Length: 255
Ligand SMILES: C[S@@+](CC[C@H](N)C(=O)[O-])C[C@H]1O[C@@H](n2cnc3c(N)ncnc32)[C@H](O)[C@@H]1O
Image 1 (cartoon, rainbow, N blue to C red):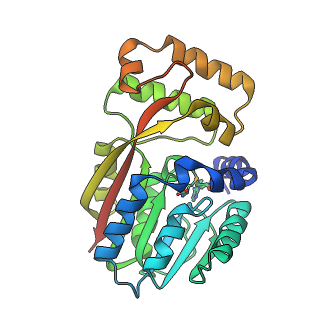
Image 2: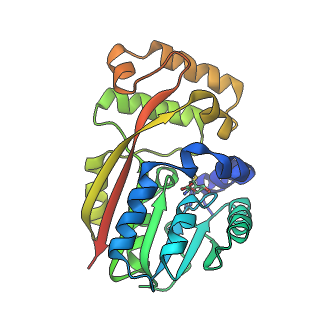
């Protein structure tokens, strides 16, 4: 396993309960939109895979709509948390599987829906991850991606990626809408719809969730305080370091 993947798993494994409790992850307009798209387009007898399921918030929403949902993540404690929450909520059609994007342990064309939420910005080789998602999607099946959407403003993008990396050493890159469109097309996934919502990140809980060391929090605050006015405006930077990024949802189909 690559060093980045090992570091990412070490970073997330102890934080499973924090992600289960996280308001940013447990709710959001993207989850309602995802359910609407799935209910309208994926047969209820279909099966789904959630890649990088974390504490399971997307998988929990999908399970009542489909026959079977598999939640996959490299962090064992995340999978334990998903199993416990699924049992507590009587979601008997939700199973878990260890693994990571780009090396999905499933046969070709296994699922009617392959989804991923707030995970792809950690993947070292996003093109390979998407190609593998496409591989395990049945012909005519759907792919759902939800992730932080990078700003189109180049300088705001650079600052946001720096803040993210200081906060979380497993951060690779947030992509903007144009990059996502090119990546999906490159993987042979036809884009059917895109939605975008503001995503306010409250600073104290944002860094606490990743156990960011105090010296990195101080650096992050310094970068924010030195951010040019146009960056502060683009990211709606607040006095305490809270800011508003964006969540993007990309809904696609596999031929
Ligand atoms: C922010 S959490 C996921 C949130 C969750 N999907 C939700 O909707 O609440 C990101 C997850 O991605 C997982 N992850 C990181 N790198 C991954 C990879 N290469 N393949 C699959 N999952 C990965 C982490 O272990 C972590 O559980």
